[in-house]
Structure formats: C-alpha cells, structure tokens
Length: 362
Ligand SMILES: Nc1nc2c(ncn2[C@@H]2O[C@H](COP(=O)(O)OP(=O)(O)OP(=O)(O)O)[C@@H](O)[C@H]2O)c(=O)[nH]1
Ligand SMILES: [Zn+2]
Image (cartoon, rainbow, N blue to C red; front, top):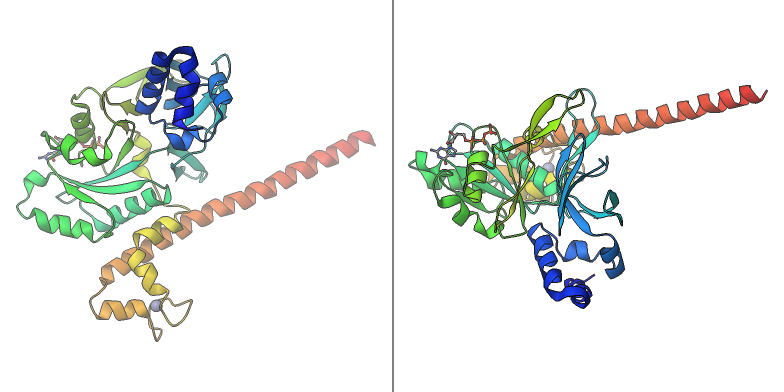
C-alpha cells in the first residue's frame, strides 16, 4: 500500500489524526517497503507496531498510539515490524525484513539466533589506537553486507593522533565503496559527521569492540548521556529483578539507535556473499585465474598472485580473506551439520512413534 493511500484512508476519519499517526510511524522507521506489504483494509484492522525491545516476558512494541508489551514470538526480534490483531493484544503477522543480523549461538549450541532486524546503517567503529585492526574491520563489514545493511567505518579518538590521514587511508583499503569518517566522539562532532545516515526514521547500529566509543557516540547523537546507560527493569525467570539495556533508542527528532550487547561477539556464518562483497577486488581477480578451482598458491596463470607481484593487491589482504573464508566455512559447516543431525533426530522420533503406535494396535 502506498503512503498516500494510507493517508487517504485516514482522511475520511480524521485527517489530522491520520497524519499524526503516519508521522509517528515514520519516526519509528515505517516506510513504503513495509506499507507495500499490506492492504488498506489490513492496516485499518491490524495496526503496525515496531519491536523496540525483547524481554523474556514479551516484546515491547511502539506504534501510533501503541506502547505495550505483547507475548513473545520466537520468530521476532528487536527492530521487527508486526501487525497487531484486532484487539491489539498480540501480533497477527510479522512483516518481511529489509535486513537481518543473525549469529551463531555461543557455546556448543550452534543454532542461529536472531539479533536485530531492519537496520539501515551499521557504523563499524574502531579507534585510532591499538584497537585498529583491518581484519576486524573487514569482518564487521562482511557481516553488515551479508545482513543487507549499509556499513560506514567510523574512526574515533581522532583527537589523539597527529597523522589522521594515514589512519583514514588504511581504513579505506577495506573497500573503496564504503564511506570512512573520523571524529572525536566526545565533542559536538558526531551529530554533524554522522548526519547523512542518522536522519529521522533511519535505524542505525554501532558495531565494534569494547572501549572504542559506541556509548559515547550514542549519547552524542541523543544529546544526553542518559540513553546508553538507561536500563529497563524486568523480572527474570526466578522472579528476581534484572536490568537489561533498552535495545532500540528513539532519539527525539532523529534516528533510532540499536544497542544490543549481543552484537559484540558476532561470528561469521553463512556469510559468503558478505565476504565476496567486502573483498570484491580479490573476488573479481579470482574469476580471471586460468583454473576455476585455483587456490592462488603456485598454479600457473593465477591472476591474484600476479596482482600481488605487481603491487596491486596486498598479500596480507589475501591472507585475511583466506582466514575469513575459513572461519565462515567452519561455522557454516557446523550449522549444516546440526541441521542434518536435527533431520536425522526427527526421523528417528517419527520412527519410534510409528513403532509405538503399531505396537499399541497389535
Ligand atoms: N579522546 C577520546 N576519547 C574517547 C573518544 N571516544 C570515546 N572515548 C573514551 O573512551 C572510553 C570508552 O568509550 P565508550 O563509549 O564507553 O566505549 P564503548 O565502545 O561503548 O565500550 P563498551 O560499552 O565496553 O562496548 C571512554 O572513556 C570515552 O570517553 C574519542 O573520540 N576521543
Ligand atoms: Zn588464482
């Protein structure tokens, strides 16, 4: 459904409240991509709401005139858009996502967990000091691209170095298609420097290691230091009060910032296309190698070795590409193995049930 239809629908009732509703939804990130998924009738019956936090007890949602906690759904995560049922007590439908970050669960359980949906921009944050690491930047960028999120590299602590251009140049080697910005996260710079990506209704997330300035940047965007430290109280399974971080911050008059601790330990899995996009230079060259299965080691006619010899590609970058491919292959294989095991287990259960049934009959 077009946004115009949406406005027209409401104009019969009250033009003023309709445009207010639309403005509220737009501020929460509602856009034609979501509106197109539903009809006018559906929208009037089942209003949309966005998941701003996931608690054990339920999903915290916001919409036009909606601020509620509804029962949890395993298939929904923070950032998702839901349609509520008629009495607005639960979700009747989950809308298709523009982007999705998943991760391999930590520990031995390797199942994919949903981390966040519908993020527009991922700020990949590192600082101009020992945290700066090309392999880490490439990995976060690949992850963002795999999730269909536009990455932007943000270098913080620019105030602490004298040779800033060399840090920026180094970050640019990750990909010539990804913007790189540098700033002092503590002063007045962040809202200005990040403004192209932080327009109202845009959803952004900060990825990066501990201490690089993600909270400082969030606070700078919000114009207050209350947000990143703000917690929400909820009862845990044993009835104790625990404080979790509110996950999607709606910055008044600005964007939405996702803050979830789970983003820090992200591993690559099923990220082949994100890696290929990040290392587009190597990917393109490898298509020119004489052998389709070239390992880029000692084969004749290897376009990558040739590019390295002629200084067009850094051999360290080739090595990092290999490592990321290996990590992805390892993690993806583990997921695949688990799926196979799950299927085998399912078959076994069905066989046992069938046997039990036939025994009961006989
Ligand atoms: N000089 C300088 N210090 C900064 C800058 N950005 C952050 N800091 C300082 O670095 C420290 C860590 O910043 P945080 O914003 O807490 O880092 P974080 O990424 O949120 O860290 P975690 O919450 O552990 O993930 C704080 O003392 C900040 O004041 C910067 O651009 N320049
Ligand atoms: Zn080759």
